[in-house]
Image 1 (spheres, helix red, strand yellow):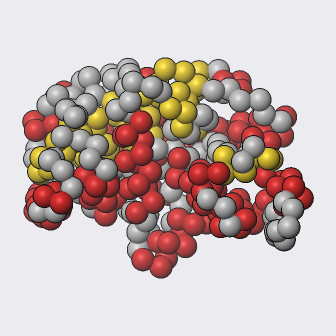
Image 2 (cartoon, rainbow, N blue to C red):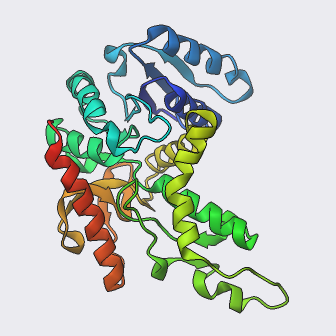
Length: 313
């Protein structure tokens, strides 16, 4: 496989993404770029020394010039969220950091697909679309992919079924205004809210939707309070997204993209299911939602637009 991936930011998230990409053998070359050059060198060297047991991959640190001809660029640079701090509190700080990155990376990798991971991911994705000059269908944030994974993991844990049997998404902002469109969620084709009643011979707990959504929204804060960062789940999530970008067959994923009228929403980046693959975003899935779910999505868009109005891009 000839696939070059550049990761900007070699902190906990960037290095975990590099590790996940290496384990899954998703790139022939991985370049790690960080303002702390020693950190990037050390992380790349540490992973590289394990590659004899994985498969051939060239993983090394470098400068922006080394990102030339990258197929995918993953942006993780930014100040990490601190305990008690919301993702949106980080907005202006990380917008200013991204402002310095955009001209450097787009100059050498104008044809790459850009995956934004740093928070607040929806705001930084919006910034990239508006200011980078890269086609909008080549730019997407990890959005609510992680929230969706948390949702599926929580439902699987509740009903003691394999995670792959849980289907559903989290829509909206990667943050406090996200929500689960329960009308789309199912376990093995049975609506989640009817699953317990459909079981025969197995006693299952009643579904508490508020508890599930609370769990999704608060998971990041709980993990950060316990270990000062989140890195493993987002590392796996981002590697899964990069894997989808390698395929000629498209995937449907809840990445953050610029909406252009879907559900009556435009000029904001947030997550609804998008059709995505080697050519970037090829379309969006405007799933049939309940009126209350459409209202929740529009509320999430309005929350993000309120932040955008206060940001200097």
